[in-house]
Image 1: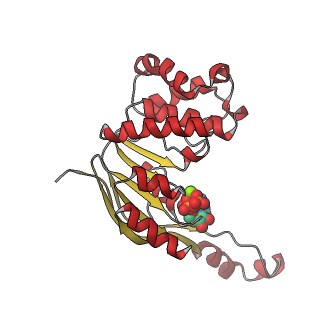
Image 2: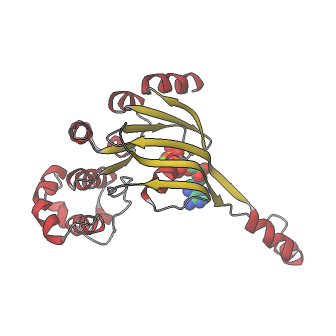
Image 3: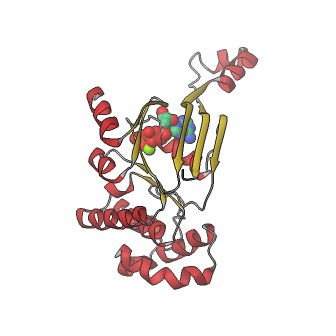
Amino acid sequence: MSECIIVFNDVSKSYPIYHHITGGIKNFLFHLPKALSSVKNSRFVALKDVSFKVNQGETLGIIGENGAGKSTMLGLIAGVLKPSKGEVIVKGRISPLLELGAGFHPELTGRENIMLNGVLLGLTRSDVLKKIDEIIDFSELDEFIDQPIRTYSSGMLARLGFSVASSLNPEILLIDEILAVGDKLFQKKSKEALLKLINGGVTTVFVSHDLESVKEICHRAIWLDHGKVRAEGEPGKVVEQYKIML
Ligand SMILES: Nc1ncnc2c1ncn2[C@@H]1O[C@H](COP(=O)(O)OP(=O)(O)OP(=O)(O)O)[C@@H](O)[C@H]1O
Ligand SMILES: [Mg+2]
């Protein structure tokens, strides 16, 4: 039995809801204590009592509609979000969260962002310097690598993100929809690189609306529906169940 790398035990995550002051500001001020407590206490539950495990070397696919809670789940694994309830256990070095722009600083150049992410991943500067040419080559960003990344298109950001995360030997790879943004050629190249990483044994959580890729790449899948696990199991079966509901 291989080791569990990611464990969610009855995890819920809620966000505060921001209200419009519907009854007018005068009314709001007149009923201030009550109004304030209602603002304070209303929360939107993005994930509700979610439990699952990911074993070492496994690739778990997460599918579901917009707003189902997929990115919230990745944020919890990455540790950028804290659960409101329950327990999240993660063992291993996590790649920068592969969501467009996450983990990147807009004013820094592509090259500087590679450095930053490498150091955040726990590598030394000289480790990153050894790999930086390989990363830049893979990204095919050429001269744009020395431009601030706020000038990048979303496809260029995806290239940089994927190149960094796949080259820095993470133990856990979190991918949020990023492969879909690059052009067809880069998508093909990233998918090949991803399969190589997966075959090399990196534990991966792959969030995507591309159901065919989920079936192709993942060992297991979870369908999230309004913050709850609606189905879990063999990717082909979970995708079929999800499709019936579309
Ligand atoms: N910081 C936040 N504050 C308030 N609500 C949030 C916040 N982040 C997410 N939400 C809400 O939580 C729900 C789940 O969002 P999440 O981003 O996890 O969905 P998703 O499944 O990744 O959707 P998509 O497919 O569109 O990327 C949504 O209703 C969203 O509005
Ligand atoms: Mg999302």
